[in-house]
Amino acid sequence: MGIIIVGLGPGDPGQITREAWQVLLEAKEVYLRTRQHPAVPHLPSHLRVHSFDHLYAEREDYASIYAAIAQEVLALAMRPDGVIYAVPGHPLVGETTTSLIAAGAAERSLPLRIVSGLSFVEATCAAVGLDPLADGLQVADAMLIARQHHPALEADRPAILGQLASRALASDVKLTLLNLYPDGHDTILVQRAGLPDQRLVRLPLYELDRIADFDNLTALYVPPLAGPRSLTALQEIVAHLRAPDGCPWDREQTHQSLRSDLLEETYEVLDALDAEDTGALQEELGDLLLHVAMHTQIAAEGGEFRMADVTAGIGSKLIRRHPHVFGDEKVEDQAEILRNWEAIKQQERTDNGVRAASLLDGIPKAIPALAQAQGYLGRAARVGLGLASDEERCVTVERALRGLCAGEGNEEDVADTLFALAALAKSRGVDAEAALRSLNARFAARVARAEALAREAGPELAARTREEQAALWESAGA
Image 1 (tube, rainbow, N blue to C red):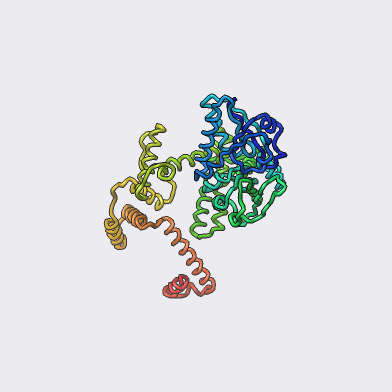
Image 2: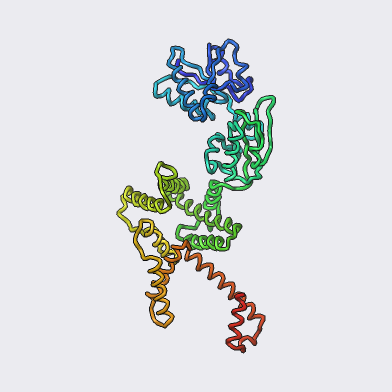
């Protein structure tokens, strides 16, 4: 006989399917994952009912509970009459034990039959008035979301999180969702969906864990945020702009025609960072992301790569280069992390058949010279390459400055001085490029104030002495 897994529906015994009911009528006994389900008291009276509830009391984590249940069901399936195993909802919707049992049955060549049932999804959709197809519903297990740092959801589509069984779980879910949704986002707790005592609790996201009565029949409905919010929505907009019925200008763009605009947008992001303007930073990052989407769309149209390839590439790279986070490797400090990073990069080149490259490859040749110098210095430091000490650099700077101030020296002396200053700045954790940009901004503001004062002084300014004009400049710096 093997294994029959029966779905008992979301709770209302009237929603048990005719097929499931017929299987239960013809059975002598049934094993339940849990008795904590409203349909259980209404099962056929002749059935001998067993459950695995004792495992929930004996074990602390759900993974070990589900594994133990699966092993017991597989053992029972070896009997001549096999086993009938019943679960809440649909056996293939949010039921981990089903997948474990199916894998074990395949290994043992045991027959497996799935008897469908209504899942919690249908009942929850009915409770909140949602069409899952028309509205693009996302369904996730609350425990899965709780383990994530950022929810695997798109904010512009509705979502239902099932099996929100406890307040502690709700707290973890809330923290994850807050990485995508605003804290005041309206949500709906759906309790005992489809039953006569069904209850809907509307509350802002930040209050999700402030109520106490959670159970296995609790789900969370998260409505979508208004407007295009996801990377998928942005890619659709860009693809539409590039389509025959889109924008003529966007259709004509190529990787090369967008190059200068990409560089300009990058510098605008840096301007927002320098100004510490979070509103401008949000906008400029959006403009920069548009270029990522546009270049990716152009590549997709040419059959070169797609957005999934871009995100897969960077995601895999980050995991591979952080074995101390995503693997078992232990590190002592940041210096060891950086050395490992360089070693992994070199191994990647070898694995990809790339000839041994320079340590400094990857530092763009077109970036500003101060940033390039600090990039080179950082790469060298990662592998412990011996460079001059801070004291030696200070000697270089002092000697060069004395010569330059005395009217001596040449372009090479200036370069040596700037490189040594960039190294000194890096050793003190200072971004030389950002520091100079900040000073340039202050100088520009001072010039603007001096110009304003000069306009106020009128034509007679030119007749003033050099000392008076210098005093005007100093006042502009106040």
